[in-house]
Amino acid sequence: MEKAALALSTLLLISGCAHNSHTETSDVNDSGTATEQSAPHHQMTDQWVGRWTGVEGLFLEISKDESAGPGHYLLHMRYGLDADQIGTFEGQATAEGIRFNRGDRSQMLRAGDGEATGMKWLMEKKDCLVVATGEGYCRD
Image (cartoon, rainbow, N blue to C red; front, side, top):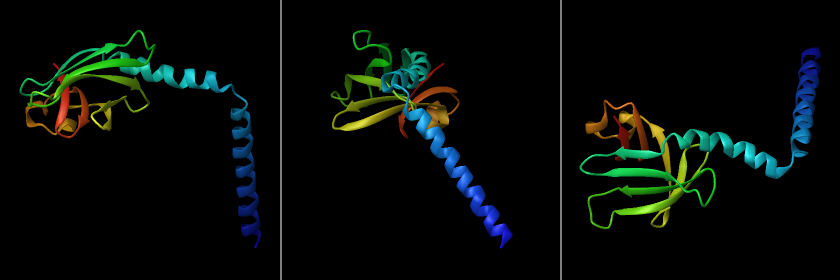
């Protein structure tokens, strides 16, 4: 019985602490929080600016979209062999990578390696960006 009471009081203590930390966090200005959270994201993805090479002539060129501000990019890519599988897309930094819309789908460009691309021609590469298995771009 004493163990149950001890466990219950510990649970109440922990939940009270969690409640207090949430209350303190909620007093922070939302605009300041958004700036702090996005800063690390674009610092990581800023390192991706430049040309990345895929297989069979596929490529990805990432540039900063200065007019849209920090954490915004233009992704010029040939992502398939068909004539219409080339274009420039607006992207935005997130915790996972760069989110962009292509066609009617939201896509995520993530850091990975050659194995993550799922393509045998890139397996040995270490510095890659991957949209999905079968679509990746690497640097030498």
